Amino acid sequence: MTLSSIYIEQKRNLKSVEKRLEVVLQAPDPILKEASLELLKAGGKRIRPLLTLLCAQYGDPEHDQVREAAVMLELIHMASLVHDDVVDDSDLRRGKPTVKAKWDNRVAMFTGDYIFAKAIELISDFNNEEVHLSISKVIRDLSLGEIDQIKDLYNYHQNLRVYLRRIKRKTALLMALSCQLGALASGCSSSVSKKLYYFGYYMGMSYQITDDILDFVGSEKQLGKPAGGDLKNGNISLPTYFAMNVFGLKDTIISALEDDSATDLKWNQIIQAIRTSGAIQASERMSDAYLQKSRDILDQLPQIKVTQSLKEIADYIGTRNY
Amino acid sequence: MNLEDLTYCLGGTVLSIYEEAELVYHQLLHEMNHPYVQKNMPKPTIDRDKLMIYYLMFRHSETTAMARTCAISVMLAEIGLNTHETMTVSPIRDKDVVKKRQLTVLSGDFYSALYYYTLVRHSKREVVKWVAEAIQNFNVQKSRFFYGKASLNWAQKIDSIRIIESALVSKIATQLGYAHFIPILSNFFLIKRLLVEKRKQENADRTSGYLLTESGEEKATLIKKLETEIKTKGDQFVDTVNTLENPTVLLSQITEFLHRRERKIIEGC
Image (cartoon, rainbow over all chains, first blue to last red; front, side, top):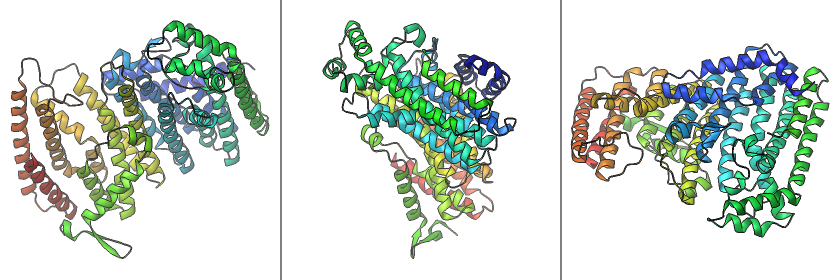
């Protein structure tokens, strides 16, 4: 089973999620509607809804709440992207103008808040305390993770634990929740939903580390933005952390980060130095370690077809190049 | 029963409604505490009048502790939206200013996240839904106000501001069965906002206001229009309060509180 065959198999369900998203995002104001729908049409891998739909197969995947959970998760992700583009001052996402670039920061605030409130409204009908406790905690931690990221900008002395906590909050928890909600919404036992939570969590950690690696090794075409953007913005991600603390590039990197007039040439030299320092391989090893943990969890679950699909997704995370 | 008679017994100590409200306010500050945000951002504006109104309304249908939780949660949502209100649109380069803008987005998100987090921990899912619906309406109205194709005349602008400023409080009042309070509540919060707009004009503060001088319009003319509007709305407010027939206990308490506050706010200007 390949990743594309998983997508093909889930095509009907993903289409249903997409349709529901389109209905939910019909805002009664033309600008909010256009901004929301453009965001939806910009596409994306829909990895979170896919995980929810797959994990629901450990229970009753036809349960109404499964699709609503998948829709809610994508809405939360979309809302955070709109606001992230203001935070990062990004004009392009997936090669298309962001809401803040097409309109302005204020419209991006309205749109993000609107979509977030839509997600909460949708989920408020769920009659399961455990679901609400999990979602609300993840949403809170997501915002704490984003604040941590600003707090840790240009913080050259941060340790590995700080980085890991940040990516846990920023990315892994929402992946974990995507898996857990699929299980809970389809009526799985607590034990299965807990295992799926940890599967999503470990995979999410690996996913973010891979993202951070791709920011150095990806091409502008693959990334939809120039490489090395994280570093230029003062974001010390895992490859930078290793380059500074293990591979002797600390002084070089700090001097560039502290130089407001650093040229593109200088940045390109530093990015190249990080690429060839061994930091990328060290980051890949850490990503692989998380992936292995996620595979270990899958070994503890019933060995049904969907378990193989989840293994395939874990493999994709480890090898993706965009 | 008037406001002074409203009391609450806490560990053997009888508190007045104002002391209770003070407790709620401090608990709200505690809930929204984030050391890094606090260190790097101006203190968010907390409309204590709104907090009091939420508390009085919830207190009528909930236990005191639950009323406190609900009032705090709804205020967190209000503060989240108000924080995003301060978002600027012009390009900036200065690192500190960039950081402030980033934290404006993220602290607003943090407060919004807390509203859901707090209510869920007290199993108040129905309130979660009311607030989520009100936030949607707030953003729809805001987008229409600032980016709508049809240009609004003065009366339409004032009416839109009234709707936006009381979007959450009107929703909560409706859901709790107090829809008939809305004219009084929305008028009061409109007057408060118009006073803020007037102050912004007087101080040439161009951040996050509703009303900017239009081409050819003098600042003095806009201030004059605002003064007239504040006077008219103030008179309407007093008339409404004075002509209430057989108000319920809660409505009497709320109008008494708002009437006092309105006089104080107007006198303060």
